[in-house]
Image 1 (cartoon, rainbow, N blue to C red):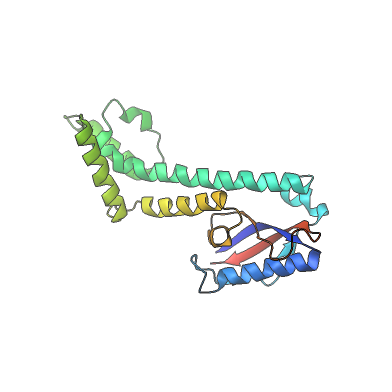
Image 2 (spheres, rainbow, N blue to C red):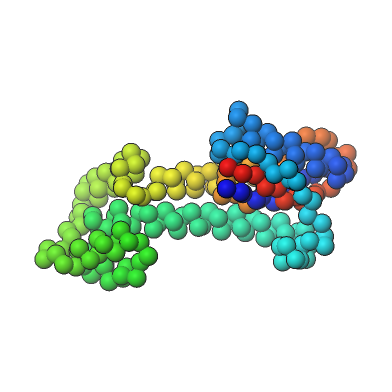
Length: 213
């Protein structure tokens, strides 16, 4: 599977910036750093994003707009993972917390597992008895967390989602750390650290890179 990423790179000139980008990309697939399972960097990567490609490829007019767009896409990627986690967790939470009064609110769910539980719940004579005390709630939540951690939740990918949310949040929190930003296959954007003297005249360059995992 291919994963494209936009890179912001500082350099004294385009050659230095491209060399830095290629070096960091190659480091990211080195077994000593590779936590994703990257196979290779595409042979034409990284590709300089020239001004005449901003509008046709990214629907922006300037590099500043491109940077803001990619930062938004980082947040959207995180939000998407959180929404997927919510979808994973609902079928796990439903047997403990969902009552017949709650069920109609989720009747349009796209989760087959949750739909099956709702149908079963509505056919039952007895309703769900929710945990009432703090101790009962804490015990129920702990059991759910342990079940997710042990991956005993059937087809749920809740643990996988949480691991990816953690990695995606690290990309946002530590934007210059390539051990985060280049080791997350949900991350669409990275700002690469500059190895040279930043006070010696540098300019930002933007590249598109493609890796396979």
